[in-house]
Picture: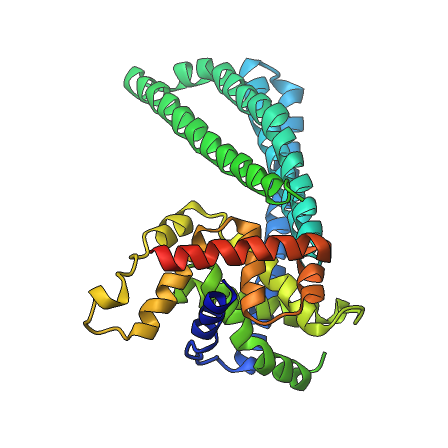
Length: 192
Length: 163
């Protein structure tokens, strides 16, 4: 058996070398990526802060004069959307903190615990957020009915159903993918 | 780490990292190049946290195997890799590719059939890493590793001979 494995080793050792790009180019790319992440971070934070401030101002000013069902609907939709964005931001930060300089075993444990946390979000928060979002939209329907022509109102109704179906399929696919990753990570060291 | 130090480390480890990635991704050079670049970007970015309590090559191999592991999570990539054409036996295919290339492709295919942990371990064996280094990269005991490596060698050899 050993002789045969030595033949495999020989095949491996005799494979042609790959032309490497220059180390300087890798450093440049690393700096470029770091800058891009910093810039994206800055703009994301700025846009989110402005959006939240505008929404808070809007809801406070509207609620003083006109607190009705449509307002509640819009408020629910915006609130759950912001919660979702916050959860994604938190997840992204947690994912970035996974330390891939640790051993494969340790890294796998860290990644598993990250995906277990994501699983909790998918089981508890995602359906609740989705249902509240749909509920908020339903509360807004009278507002659309009063303000839009009958044809356009039907269009809003039908298109929103299609959008919700597409959105739920997309979410389910994403959840399935993450659950598969968790399963894959958990099985990696199960025999040891 | 200064740029000069990085350059030395890069030149010393590039081929090793690239070969490991090629083995992991069934000889798909496009993916292997991307992942190798990602590994060295991480090496550069994280060089300030390298404490020197392990050898630099052990540290780089850790980053490499962890990056390879998570890179394959995309389904599209899995599909792309799985659809890589399986090579015919050298004697049945006398055209363009040399026997050595055919044998290497066959080896990639057999490595790809192993489970994830075995794949990573055997790639490090093929790269000539000592058992204590492999144990440090994988995070398993040397004793467990020895038993595993014996089994993997047997199954890889069988696969290469049978295909």
